[in-house]
Structure formats: structure tokens, C-alpha cells
Image (tube, rainbow, N blue to C red; front, side, top):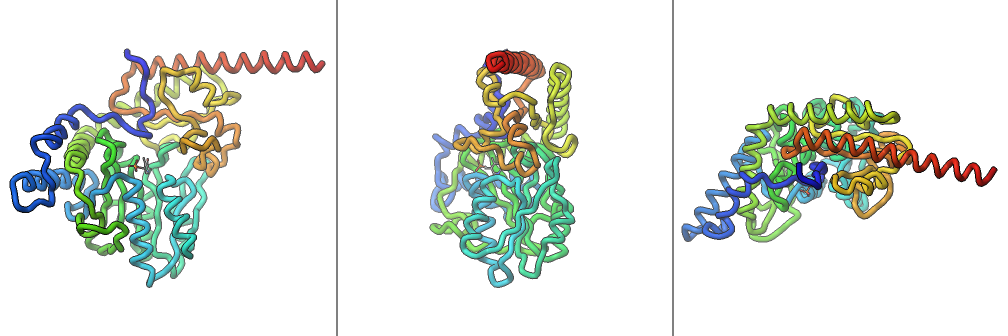
Length: 396
Ligand SMILES: *Cc1c(COP(=O)(O)O)cnc(C)c1O
């Protein structure tokens, strides 16, 4: 077993070696611009892009013409939300979302709210779920768009997107879902979900960083977006800019592998994740699971450990890469908005650890992580007990 151990697969994933192998020729021999129509370099690049587009479309049950390549899920969310709000302005000015969305949705909607769009932020239950009934109840004649993520990046909770999609379809309202964590990990199909717009990202599914896609529905009913990026008119005029050919090739291969291996990989990760939780609960008291026990990503575990600061715990386990309930939005040390929306106390949020298990984690690593966590937690707890009793004896 090699240290350090990477257990932060919700933040990003390692490029699968099979993906990298596919990408490499497109940096050197096949370096053409996919928009060059007059020579073989361009033709080969374009063929590679279209093959990648087909693979990404297949992953989410879309057609090739519905896939717009972007730089990642952040950009896809921006193009979807800004583009829809502008294109449908004559039909209404109300958007519905929920409190545990990624910042790449919340902050875009915050920006449109400043321009006068009304935004409803639905609450979540203690286990992190949005009530589809609450979505239906929040719809008004002015609602143009609902944006609810498929899987949460901190607690792994799977939102009831099929039900929400059906409600939106019946109401004639657009439904956008950020599927950056769901795509490639669990079955996701744009038809089952009745999605109008879907954001995905390659680096969350063992592809390269800096490449993602936006699904834009073309029929039943067709979705129109106002462009927010202008230039050469690439990607149906919705995302101008020279295409990232190696990135698209890698994204395509990553999507193909994720789809082919999803069944066995999800089962393997669920087993490892369940074993990790069982071992931690066996070795420690005061361990609370955050997020719904079943409706969650196979590779996600998020727990609060009573009486322990997760950042102190991570410092004590420097050879294990994890993230905590306070560090999710990197620069800020405030408790995560997700855990807060779920009703955790600031203490519970401070004691929260996110384990993101992925394709390259082994049973041996997970066993090591569980033992380390138990040992270090006990140590931190005993130190703070000693500290507490010393304080008590001094003040006595
Ligand atoms: C990672 C992530 C994003 C951002 O994706 P990038 O491709 O890094 O821009 C957006 N939403 C969710 C849910 C994510 O997990």
C-alpha cells in the first residue's frame, strides 16, 4: 500500500491511465483545430471531437446534437442558467433552486437576483433531501426554471430528480440539473429525468480537468438559450472558442469507461464505503452519518464525529487526503452551507469529514484509514479530556 491515500474523489479524480493513453496523440501528431475545414489535421480533430461527443451523449442518454462542450460543470451551469434566464425573460422572472446546491449554481443565481430575477431557495430535510411537493408548491405563473442537483458533492445525497423533472415538464417549466457528481457514478438518463439542461464535468469521472459538457434538450420541448460567450460560433453558437480536442477525447473515453464499468464499480465502492462506516462505528462512539443512508452516491461517506475538530483530525492524518465540513469552499473556514442547511449545529459541522471513495481505492487502504481515524480520534479526545480536567483542577 502506498501513502498518501487519496480519498477526496468528489473534489477531483485521477485521470484513468486508459484515458490518458487515448489523449496523448492529440497533443502532438493529431494537434489540429477541429474547426479547420481545409486539411486533414482539422478533419482528424473534428472526427475525434464527434466521437467524444457521441460517448458523452451515450453516458447520459442524450443525442450528439444536444451536447455542448464547455470547460467544466461551473461553465455549464453559468451558460445554462444565465442563458435560460435571458432567453425566457419574456415568459417570467422566477427561478427555483435549493439551499445545498454547488456554489456554481448558487452564485450564478445570486448574480441574476441582483438584476431583478426572483429566486426561491427551497430548504432540505435533516437527511439532505428536497421535497418534490415543495418544488410544485413554489411554482408560480412567472416561474421559468427549476435547478436542482442530481447528487450533492458534500454529503452525496441523491435528489429526487425524476419526480422534480416530471413536475417541471407538466408545468411547462425548464428543469436544469447539475449532474457533475452523478454522471458516471449512478445511472443517469436525460429522458428518465425529463431534464431540459444538464451539467457534467470530465474530471469528476476520471477524465481530465478543464473539459465538461452542457446537455441542451432539442425536442419535447426544444430548449433555447441566449449565448453568454461570443466569438467564432462554435458549439451551435452557445460556446465559442477553439475546442479542447485532447480534453474531449479524454472525456469521451472516460464516459465510455464509466458507463461500461458502472454496475460493478458502484457495487464495489458501496461495499468499501459500508465497511468503512461499520468499522468506524464499531471503534468509536459519537459517530453520526450525514445525509440519507441509502439515497446517496456509492462512494460517498460523510460523518460527524462528536467532540473532535475535523481539521485537527486531518492534521493528525496527513497521509490521508480527505476534506472537512469547514474546508469545502476552500478559502473560507465557515461551516459548510450544505451541513448548515441540513440543520447540523456548528459543532457537528466542525466535526464533519467527507470521504470520497473512487476507482483506485483498495480494501487495504480503507482498512488503514478506518484504523487511523479511530486511533487519532481517541487520541484527540483523550487530550481534550486531560486538558479539560486540568483546567477544572486549576480553577478549583
Ligand atoms: C465539481 C462540481 C462542480 C464544478 O465542476 P468544474 O468542472 O470543476 O467546474 C459543479 N457542481 C458540482 C456538483 C460539482 O461537484
